[in-house]
Image (tube, rainbow, N blue to C red; front, side, top):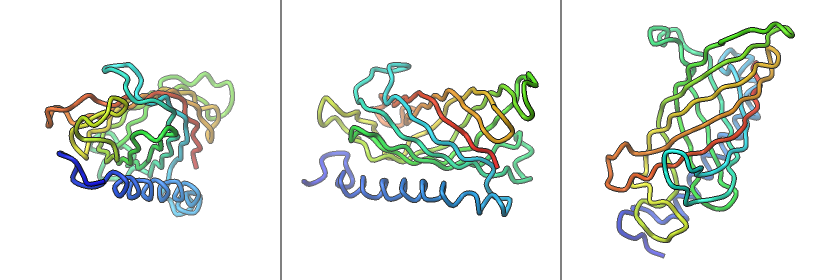
Length: 199
């Protein structure tokens, strides 16, 4: 099927490219221990999210998202803005709806250390960056969102408990939108739980 108005590529071709990128991201999760030994990777996270939740927008798409993420050690030059960790990740929708890959900067702060065991603590984080997706750009059918632009801003928050110095569990909320660069800007919001493994 040819691309419609506002659809610069066939969805199947673009979806294959994003899916390939996501597979690469998840493969990198498997290779992260070696990169961590070299001092490059700080943490990996894996989670399950509710897709297109009705917060800051109307839910149209459905299904669950499997999300994987790699957080790199913060380089020295980022200390001037609070030492965020460069982050890459991807999200795959289990119902065949919008998938996306993203690159962010992630800031994390420990709010309280209850000292129940070594290395534990309650933390709050925030992230800001960009994403590329394989969803629709213009209205096509009532079951898919018309996200307006292929590239989107990606931002959100996470709050969790660092169970030990290695393992964490967190609640997570992400928002994707084009900030009204396009006249179509419904936004896409996902929320759920993630597990973290810190090297």
